[in-house]
Length: 114
Length: 242
Image 1: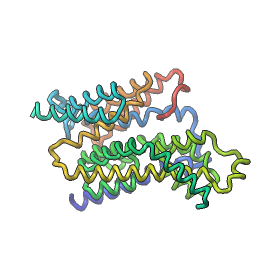
Image 2: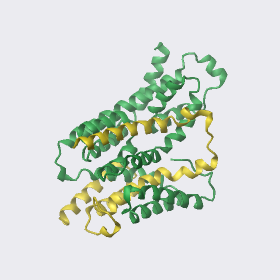
Image 3: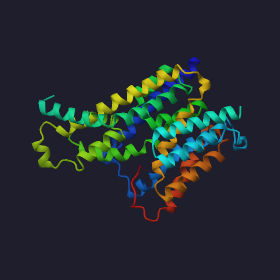
Image 4: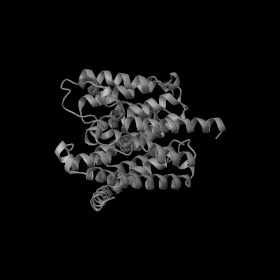
């Protein structure tokens, strides 16, 4: 890793440490200075879900380093592994079976489409 | 620590230890995903020890890999961590007697597991009278016990995952474990129709606008999902932030 790239990661890690502090101590830091309305709390309710989905969906449906949706194709092992993991989660609701099935189908698809 | 404080600390520590298997499973998978990302082993270990926020770390990895700007990664981490903002409201009520910096440190170590264990054991903050009697701040020591067991089991699993995965060849495709872990994190959040539609919206927007620069598709997706969630939530009181 180049020097510049590792500095970037160092800054990022420092930033993420601050984000952990800021989020976990948000109302401790701001105390009574800020009042978030009911409406505000309701509105942000789906933000964590949306952020995670926004990360995951391209991970599953687009190839690594894709630049647009035009690169979608059914030969991507991620799609099959991802769908298998979703089905496994739906039925098991647990981490281990989801992981084992998702990884197994992903690996099989990689060899199948290789 | 006084004997009573020690007793409470050990009680909390033991109680959290019952969740150790779950915590370790999560942290091993997170560790594997970190080791198989673009991070070096040292960076992965530093992130695990210092950032100490599993979902935010898992979400950051694909963004780091594609070279998204630091601010986009930080905003995304904060979004993923919003549940802690809500927890901090409860924490503030429970520990308002502590000095500011002790509360901030306490906040930093309060994960989902330790917050939920504390609230389960002590649903309400202490009243003025209770607090006057509780000179030793026993609830604080119970919480510190939860946090210590949580931190130790997380780090053991995470660092084990990082070191193990770094011994495994890259072409085994282990990096996909991070995506599977995200599926399992997201699953329980889809408990309402409005949440499912918000999720579909976020996914569709994120994929369709994938080509725009700086991974701003994530910010767009969050905005669109909040909009859809807000419109669909006819009875906004029914759920809690997860």
